Length: 318
Image (cartoon, rainbow, N blue to C red; front, side, top):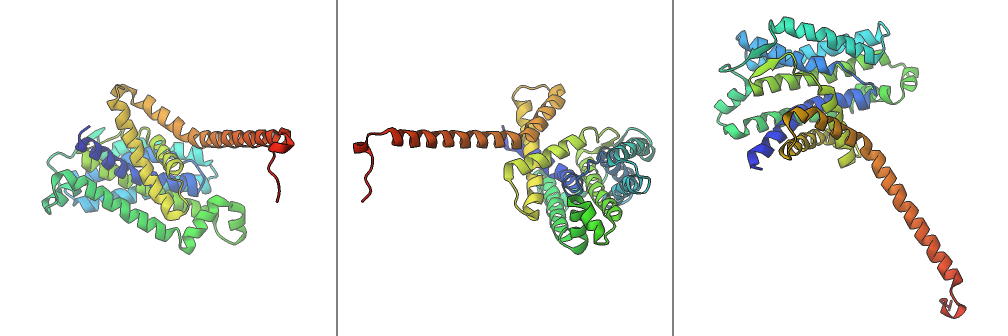
């Protein structure tokens, strides 16, 4: 395959890596599934596209999309912590409400951005070669937010956020408001997801109300693939592994489609990749247990053979 094909998959992996970072916050740090991302991803695209078509600068539109995703997470957190609705159901309700909200914001199901200023066109106008504009922009956003999350999650508030997912009762006994930590985590996660949607809309040249379908699947797959393949040992390595998992996931889809799968088979390919990613730790454990069992049987067989050997053939102690 030509280099530009691989480059396109890497760029997709980077922009969806922001979504994977958001999923990492809810799935791994808070230990709760959040379906809001299927609504906040197109929300970010809708807000950015609408503001750009209204004449606002792309940077302002992108920042507004990030803030809109933050509000979406706050709403889910309000339903979960104040109204005592389960996290899964709160995410579903918010996702459903955001679908109508996105249509309201855009005024229709699709908003084109052809011949309108975007972040990528501004970077290209600054002298960056066209072929590497998206790689540079996506990579810069990913590096910035990895560094930001690494710093934040090591602060006092960040430690409280991580402890809320690890042991909620313990951190509550220390006087920390776990409800506030959950709302903060949901807001932070969905802001990253909305930012990813805003960047993707500007990259593709349009925003669509159906852009968020299946986002939670790809995000979770990226997190699981990254952890299974790269075995991170610390916080920074975990954040990097999540983004690398997103890139691997996009490359795997590319290889599957290039291997003969039809575009209509994309959902099947995605499901197979997610199943493989989810079962990878169990498969590795089974392989390790099988090897250990084989080694133990071999050692036992050698011990029996030595015990049954003739006295003259046994090694002598000097």
